[in-house]
Amino acid sequence: MFELDREQRRRFWTRLCRMGIVRERELVRAHQVAQSRRMSPEAALVSLGILTAEQAVALLNDESPLGLSMDNLGVS
Image (cartoon, rainbow, N blue to C red; front, side, top):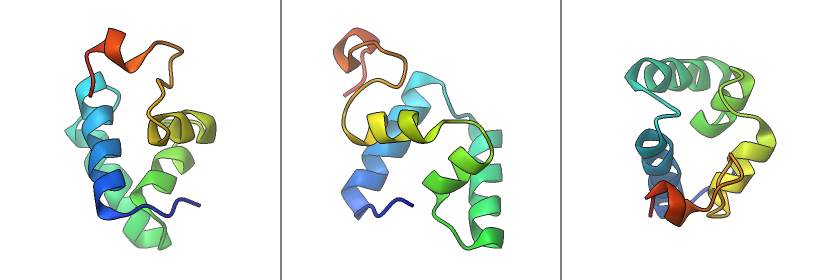
């Protein structure tokens, strides 16, 4: 579902954490699901219902998944 290079993946997860969308518990769960289902951790977030596919794509494209600009959210 998501093909990310190392920098994209780092930026994606940093934004999720800074925005408070993902806490440690969800992060661990997403990685466990990803490993057990052999999918990317980003796809696991969608599978778990933490993000919609559209929200994940918005974050990957440097957009806010909530309709706010990243600058307004204080996220780089």
